[in-house]
Length: 202
Image (cartoon, rainbow, N blue to C red; front, side, top):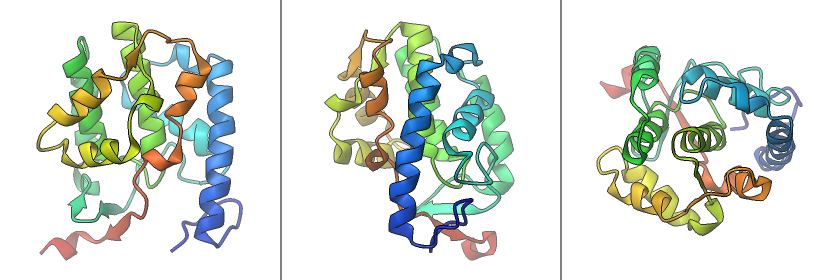
């Protein structure tokens, strides 16, 4: 099923290709214009701003909390009815050291607040926190994509794996656009969300 979009694209492969191209161009502008330097780092408000900036030309829901329940395989992300309270909790989570920052990132992944584009937005969001608190960012080119996706799948139960992957890829090149852009690669994010109704859980 192809997501409804502003471009009128009905083929999912074509939508994926166009979405990746547009979001990458917008990500470059986001970096070059230094708009993200003025955001409240670590807040959902800042994540919503990033998401809207990247996807506003493609989706009406850009920057908006999703109104449907979504799942990937056997994993269900935060149910819509608990999503706002989950995001309020994440806003209050500490972010003063590496472990705290990754725990916050893991919780935001479980929340998955948007209908699409969560991964790319959240990786920019994560790097902003790391940049502010530790003066480091992740060099995503040093992380195997399959290892990353598997570690993220397991992270709600055990975050040791994702912490090890991210820690091993930290760099002090916080102003390098090439390093920043590696995290926008669409192949890092979960494809094929299934939409489900709350009653399906019963």
